[in-house]
Length: 245
Image (cartoon, rainbow, N blue to C red; front, top):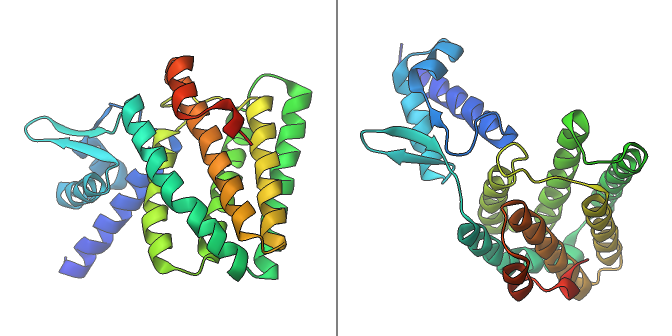
């Protein structure tokens, strides 16, 4: 096997583990067993170890010398700090997107809003909270929406920096890890906020685009922190109700 082959296997292992992390297949705090992953991929141990080191560098995995690698398990203070960083960056990116987004991109965003509305209407009929394929479709539509808004800012630094934050968000908000439940109220707020953001982008209103993005992030913070059991008082002090979309 040459060096290029080893790198290719390591890349494949990285993408495989990363996908399973973000889908919630590996529980928060759970150990990543190198040998089991290598057997699953029919690969040797070294490429898997290299992939895990890469994931640790990205903040998705905690590597403890002598103990192994474990899925990150953030606490509420880390989640709060994470959202504060996103709130400093993503509204600015949305404002830039308002001046640079194309009509085809706006049409894609409108289509994603329609997908969210379809899922929310189904949830209204079924009751409870999203599960299974509906939940996966919801998270996918939401991720695609925000990724496209960031891309529309036409700034590669936004793509890399905010993209990294959003990958961490997927891990932190994994429905199997934090127990975040998307009920009708959450779905309606999210959909409504996205519709308002698309309208602001269509009007080339950079200030409104920034404000709607900021409010959407605060709703996400409220939902995630509440699922982790943070007290209502703590939530209100950092993310007041008046900030919700």
